[in-house]
Amino acid sequence: MTDPILAARIYLVDDKPANLRLLERYLGRAGFEDLASFTDGRAALAAMETDQPDLLLLDLHMPGLDGFGVLGALREQVPADDFLPVLALTGDVESDVRRRALASGATDFLTMPLDAEEVILRVRNLIRTRQLHKIVRARNLALAGEVKAVEQALAEAQEIGGLGSGEWDLVSDRLRWSDGALRLFGVDAERLTHITDFLALVAPDDRASVEAGLRATLDSGRPFGLRHRL
Image (cartoon, rainbow, N blue to C red):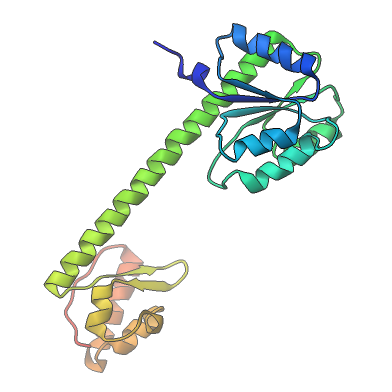
């Protein structure tokens, strides 16, 4: 069975061709084949406009646009709900450089001179994290699609049956009503954003029982049911 981690697309960005060849050799021996090498950070960013790597190995100290500049550009280029791990390459062991890189978006570090085993271990760990993120993201999108489908079905059922429904967020004290409920109330959503707005629509003779039911549910957590006029 093929290791899915080895199928990952990896970008290598370093202004020194010798370093790129060394990384290519280490990764190639470990079974990684989908590699793209760049000696210019701007070229790597341009390629990412139409390509989606799973990992970026990035030299921090380069002429022109250095690694910090690339990290800054990635914050604008990579969607907020995506995760692109960046393995920073540096010969600088000073903690200030590491902190600056982490603050700029680097995920992990490799210190020069490179150790082949350490390179492969860190690369595999970051790619595994990227793949887990993609799985979670796909599940969240699927759940969002299911929620939209349920909401659409509920809206259609309420329209057919002349029904309505609403939700009360106790933290924000905001109400959200279905289109069916708003049709029954005969008002716009903007006029029914708080519980007091709803209670104002309840017939005066029924208001006390509705308020008592709400208080009982808030105190006990148990549901209540009643009929009232508007």
